[in-house]
Image (cartoon, rainbow, N blue to C red; front, side, top):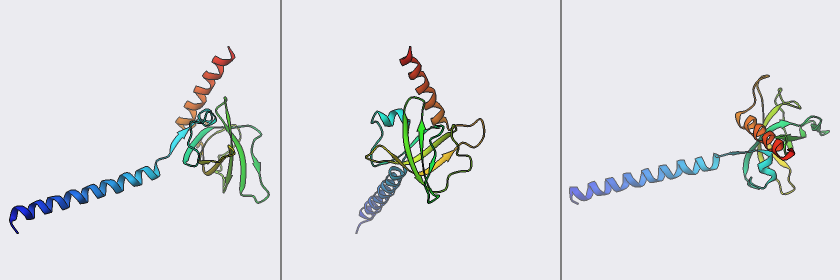
Length: 148
């Protein structure tokens, strides 16, 4: 084999390895990509059914209901315009309370209930996740426009 053929095979092999590595990285990135939606967007059907995404807003006052097993909790997330019922099985963060900001990650079921696999709560009195704060602000503006 000539030196030129060896070089071409080596370069071709290197390019093939690079393409395979990039494909694996993009595949892993796509599988772990989680989008954020507001309750209003979910109610309008803009959120994917059966795929994992996040919903954020305020936990509606009086909406937290605990099941007898002690692990299953249902509550409602709102952006002041729309509400999304959420079901979660697991331990809630200590800071999770009614009237406070929260972001839940999971899937939307066919019946409209959001089945959460993870619940994130605010970490101090002044903090709300930026996405949730923006969603509440936008919903409040929309509600003010509609009521006028």
